[in-house]
Length: 320
Image 1 (cartoon, rainbow, N blue to C red):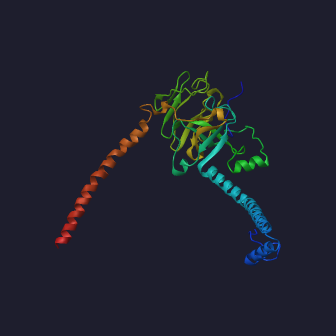
Image 2 (image 1 turned 90 degrees about the horizontal axis):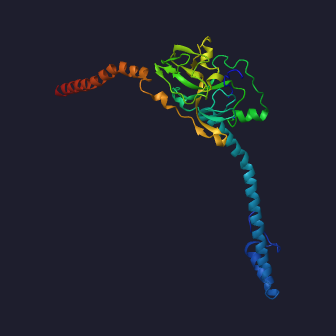
């Protein structure tokens, strides 16, 4: 069996021109009429010239429209490329799955869309999210990097194809800053003492028997990640001796993968499993709210007192 995978990288001339008689406008019409009278009512020739003019005009109009389209086409292409680049940079980017480390949730060759917008507004990874992140410390050392051609580089630049040069990984967020995470051989992964029910783990794999760990306290602004194919994923567990201790800095996270977009028969969303919402797992967040409650209550109580005092001072000034 191949060794565990890091899961790396993962792009006219108008109608009415002079007729055969050399006259135009009303003079031309009179000449045509005179010719008709001299020939005994051969007016059809005048009508024929009119029809020819209409035909030439519509043809010129069509040619003008075609020229206009070809002039505008480069502008339209340029606008489309700029929009694609903006979307790739700030909104959504496609990534390709190059390994088996996230099976069966993600298969090799899948294309996922990653939300890059919410991190711009301070959003941080949540437990259970599948995230793409930059290599935090040579996790992909020794992994082969394919050499893209010029077309692939261009498509990657505008976001129509994932880049093969970027050293990115994709894993599931198990624990976030402030959490305590651990897993003993034969047991489940525990977050803040709560065992996780992980139906997404690859069939036949255990929670962590290949690499037990912890307990570890996750530092603030860092996350602990693991692949769903536990026996084939070199994730946080295998990098505890690194400078980051196996944790991934939040500022290395590109965004959350929220949908499998390709192939079509694999289309699906990537929701957060229910186990990460179980009671008690958010005790850390609850303690933060509890500790701040006295301060909030004190502020709320001070507002009426300040308003009452200002009213009394204003009334005193008015009386004087």
